[in-house]
Length: 444
Image 1 (spheres, rainbow, N blue to C red):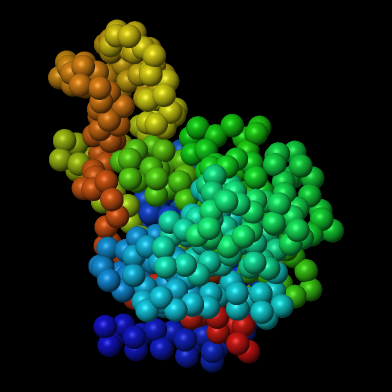
Image 2: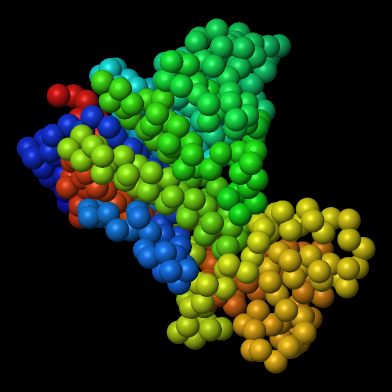
């Protein structure tokens, strides 16, 4: 620990000595995204002819330790607090230190330095990762109180999923008398935006923004109807338009559905959300190209989810990332699709559509052809009521992807950076160093 602390001090000294303060700071967080998630998406992108991920081609890299104050395996709230506030805290805590005292986030530091501040997420905007930047609660489960903290944050732009349905507790004596949070937000100067059309038409003169495309998360990228919901890249593009100005901005962007797919060991769904995050990173890098001396782009993860691995015993030394393209919907969406189906035979067309599995040999050597054993596996799973699980297991197996957990792991994550001050992100660092480096820009 002593050596890690010294390394963090060295990083801060380097930042202070050599880096100018960036006017524009982008911080991207892939929830549940560690090395395997990034590299599986990277190999898939290469196989599709699109080259490496933008986040993996950034010039500066730091291996980042993720433990919380009370566990080697962190949860998202404690990890977000570390990344946002620069302090280790106990699992489940948002924006407070290990003693439960209020912690000061880099987003708040940016606000107090006169920067505009934006928070974007593909899950609910009161979820653990975004909350770490504006909320101060001992429990991530205090969703109404966290929503009240959002209203009081004085941040300029909130976009993504809704408030998790916890937005109207007028009669609940345990919480402040804020009433309906959306109404309270409007009273505090926020414009509530509910449709993609209204969102894309926003202008900087429209003031502070809080989106309500849904009262839950946005759809997983593999399932999303982008005629109804913006892409993550579109959310970032609009955030830039709304926040850019004389004083600069701080923008945190979370790819939150990566984690949810990791918990479900759903490889193709995980992949699509990593690619969606990378498309958003590309938007920021385009902005960096236009403002090279004033912009910093940082990409990190809060922890790894699922114990994902690039290799499975059944395929030996082979990996087949390209086969993930056969899956057309999330495992959860597939489960809903077959909910009313009465027999396994009736479910077969849905299996073909969702996973690209082939039940009949057409002589072409299609790698998605199911063996007799795999067909029996699916048939038995249907009887046991776990067909979606069996389909995702076979899909991972055919691609050469392994899983060791349905929860978080202690694996370190990668932090990559480009632009003004990016050289500070190097070596092995604690996740708290990310906040410390960014806060230092606003202390000058």
